[in-house]
Length: 563
Ligand code: GLC
Image (cartoon, rainbow, N blue to C red):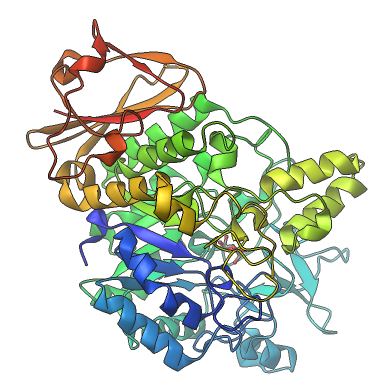
């Protein structure tokens, strides 16, 4: 295992990775069976979405027991075997810690509901306003108000997500002790990696107040000053004691300034952060449930600002296009028809050569894309179903509402890993998959291994980060911010300079190449067989491609030049 700056993390959605017992749902034994594949990617850590006991209202993010394994996924013995077997390949386990809220089925909430005051202080319970209205005007991120009656007490409890996900009150020292115990429980099992779910929401103010008319209520509870205090405390009590720990915080609606604080090593908080601004460039007016083509200028600006801002402040970004909450980037920013290979490898290049730690979401490495669903009944996710209902009730034509959900639903990423072309299970299950894959006939691991070019490209990119300090440590600088088609940047370390050029268009486009790169060599590229360069090979010169200091990029071409 290497330090987090030269690491690549692979994300597995356990419910959809590999089903070992034919019940249609992925499990831990299934993951163990697929370790040779995971190891073949060359990744350093695997982040697993939650596989703890849960009623499953939000697919495992509503946890009812933090220190056990969901029986549908396996046993604690399976888990220990998984940690050991991955460890034998030098791969670390990263667990998902959902500590902003518990399921309302969690013992703490049930005791609170039964009248135990100690546990009532674990949650945000509030009286209605004198006029009988809800304690604040906040809305749930999954739709509707963020407050729900607390039994028949007349009080309400806060839930920023589903009504079965009750927010924990971190002001209470007992809550902090409990969450530290959870992290330490998994450390005692050899886990050194942690991903902290929506962790910038734990520092709500003590007095919860209405958002002023016409303002965004998220500002009332996001990135509060206590987040830093609590993270420092948690680090000191738990993961901060491991020299080899790797941590990433999921930061919702955050700022560069806050994220520098969370990830600058001097603050002793986290190794790195996820932010989502670059994945909102296809939202109309910042609203997710809309249809809009992506704005490349905004995408370039945001990736550039974050890369530069975090570098200047000594922070560190987690780099990603995909995860279990996002529709597939290939459908959003690429071309799944004529240019599947080119656009998949271009997107990969753009992220993997940046300053930060890349995350690969399962299936991305074989070019998986959104399922071709035709009915709202194909979707399982509570968020998508709520959004569809809200759109239709709000007067949107059902066909349009469906198109919106089709383009934005989280289930787009949650379909089973496509191991082979079998119908209906895609080699993921011998039973009926819990969520239906649709294009395993053309996109699957077996086919990629035999004749594909996306998977080998990912393997090469992953290996390059470990080989070249200019990738893992080099200074970032934006290049050609005004170019209409191409994302470009340079990296610099000691005597090495890297220039990365990525075209986001399906047509040819010209890019000026500075004199300093005129005699550079091609490190990797997705045209002309440059995807087949191996480290032992002589790198081809870029000179043949240059015409008076200009290079013409072909559709979705990516090329990295090393000088
Ligand atoms: C995070 C998770 C998402 C979950 C939410 C509530 O955003 O990634 O899947 O629904 O937190 O826990």
